[in-house]
Each structure stands twice: as structure tokens, then as C-alpha cells.
Image (cartoon, rainbow, N blue to C red; front, side, top):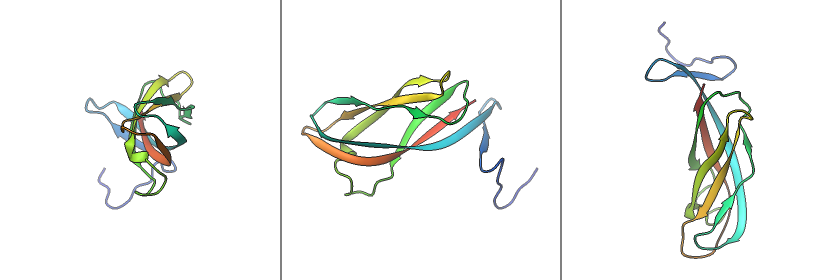
Length: 117
């Protein structure tokens, strides 16, 4: 099939194929994180992000900060890592580390991409 222009699949749900032609699902989500007075080098644990999609295997990737630069505090001084990726309950949590040398505060949202099957 050759398609030019836009194609909407299943109400906007995309289907991708991996390099070995396995059909994969891709989904975007957002996480909002806010805190104040986080010490230098301190790590916080977020609540759960529910995928809203049934995955038997999934990769969770944190993308760009949706909050405009200069708004929301020290969001550019954090390192965010997904953990407890749970395909039984289709959810995960995030570790958020202050990578600066000073106390920080932030209130921001990040894009998350889920890819799996």
C-alpha cells in the first residue's frame, strides 16, 4: 500500500514494526512532577504512571520537558529514570535525582514514550 498525506489508524493509535518486523505499539504520555527544596544529589521516587494500554513487553523513555524554559523552577537540573516497569499491571514509576550542587525546586511536565507489544 502506498499512502500520501495523513493516515489515522484505529482512532489515532499508531502501529510500528521493529527491525525484525514484529508489530509494536507506541504511545505517548505525560508525567507531571513538582517538589521543593530537594537537596543536592537527592533522589525522589514518583507515584505510578498507568500506561492505559496492555503491554506484554515495553520500553519507557522520558523525552523533553514540556514546561517552557524559565518557567516552573529548576526542572533542567534533574535526571529522570523509569523503574519498576510492570507489564502485569501496566505501570511504572520514576526516580528523580537532583544533579546540581544546590537545593532545587521545580513544577514541570515531561513527555514519555512507551514502545512495546
